[in-house]
Length: 318
Image 1 (cartoon, helix red, strand yellow):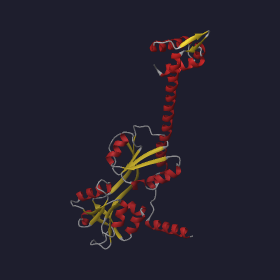
Image 2 (cartoon, one colour):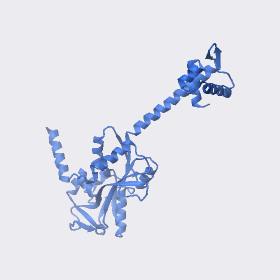
Image 3 (spheres, rainbow, N blue to C red):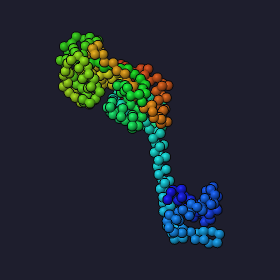
Image 4 (cartoon, rainbow, N blue to C red):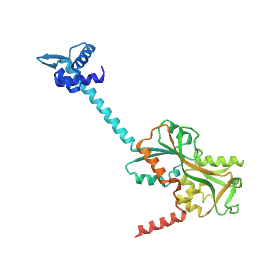
């Protein structure tokens, strides 16, 4: 028995008249009579008794009507839940990145401009980001490795570079640019091995044929606090010195060295699967990125970080 047949049967039971039910359903009376005959033939019993010009449910018909109400009610519940889920999904944007630092200033600004939306962010590997984009698990991926998959489109968020931050004093004369091989004997602190920063250390080490002397691995917050006591170097994006207050403080007691061999420039991109139709929320993010030219946004300098902190402390004191 089909759902449409149940709806027709329910209408006949409510009207107690074939012609009136047909008019309500806007179908022909013979067509509705044939539908009722097919239902009764399938069940093997009559469902209505005639009373003059009207028809009324018999004991079998009452059983069918009770179940028809339940089935149609559940169908309405299914539609309601699906509609609610779609509405929630239209207000949610899912983003995965290889580093939370890649979110920078533009995403908080987008959130402030779109308070009705929800951003769900996870830190993931490059490989999983590509898989999740292809499977529609996430709307956007952010990383410094541009996939050559033809299904993806990319927007350059900004360009950055890795630098070596070395505490004072050290055995190397201060120079703005160095070969990474110069740091062969220097101790390093690093993020866990699966993190892209640690991969970058390995890539740069392999390029100049050295083995990095990593003496401590831990989360980002720990690295910035142990590098000075351990008198160890760290490889970091230049932008983190400007954006992270702990790193900005550490850099005041360190040499910051650009690398010439290998060059450690990276391009951070926002990627999405062009084959999929973007949700309204995801399209709003794309429109915002293109309209506001987020790759041209100026980063906060270390002096501005400290000035902002000083002003905040003064306002608290008042």
